[in-house]
Amino acid sequence: MILSSSQLRRAAALQEKIEDMQQELAQLLSGSSKSASTPSSTTEKPAKKKRVMSAAARKKIADAQRKRWAKQKSAAPAAEKKAK
Image 1 (cartoon, rainbow, N blue to C red):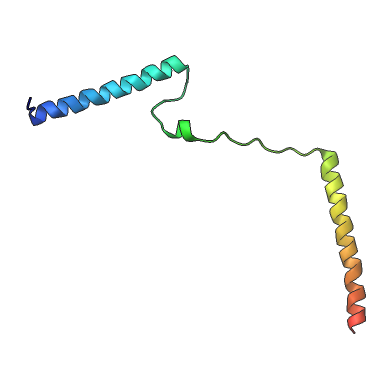
Image 2 (image 1 turned 180 degrees about the vertical axis):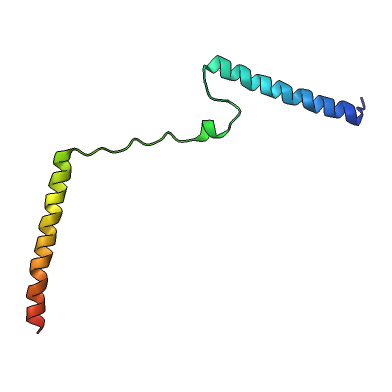
């Protein structure tokens, strides 16, 4: 069976319509509200939840950092005096 170019174009258009309708049917059956035709919707990783730190934990970390800064500042002048 030999098809003309117009018949081939018509067949390609029908094939595309069939694929679109199959995707729409799959979307309806799965209950998904997003378009099934977008490949990124199936390959995207879920967004990570933002980490939330309690106020007490932030205070504890800040106090520890201030303690480290104070220790470093007190050690720096002593080292400079010894170098002179």
